[in-house]
Length: 230
Image (cartoon, rainbow, N blue to C red; front, side, top):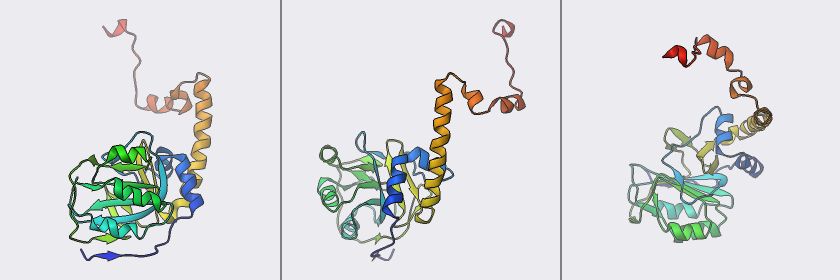
């Protein structure tokens, strides 16, 4: 890996980021054709954490967080740090001092496949963070990786400037070029869900709301009375 820091990448427009963030991870994921979802190993560090921003991507060597410090300089208000490593590593790459610096710069969150530490302090500061582990074991600063180059997490490619939406359901990424169309899909999905909710509240069954009875018939599902099945 050749160390490189890419400066001033294009970022998704703030209005698109805010709108997608308001819809939440599940709706965005479904509206994006069930793509962009990071795996379930990346979980919120504290309950209620929620964030939406533009990705600053960071790729570090295992056990070394020097590149995180390089990345901080490249952040702007509204960004989210997306951090992963060249080989699996759960060391505590980020703690309260780094999140303080990020928060001061207007960074709205952190997503990492590594560990994180100083969780109590990070929660007290209400800095939104998602990680694969909580681990007090620290890192060294001896090798450099890359900043603002595409990274892959659980099969999802994240490029700098992409939209990152994170909440209690996990983390989803929307490519910058697709943000507007995914937002339109979210709008339509919310309208459909509102109608479904109305019908559920009126007492209709999900089999009928979702028009599932023809499928059940096609699968030749048999309904058998309890006594007849003894």
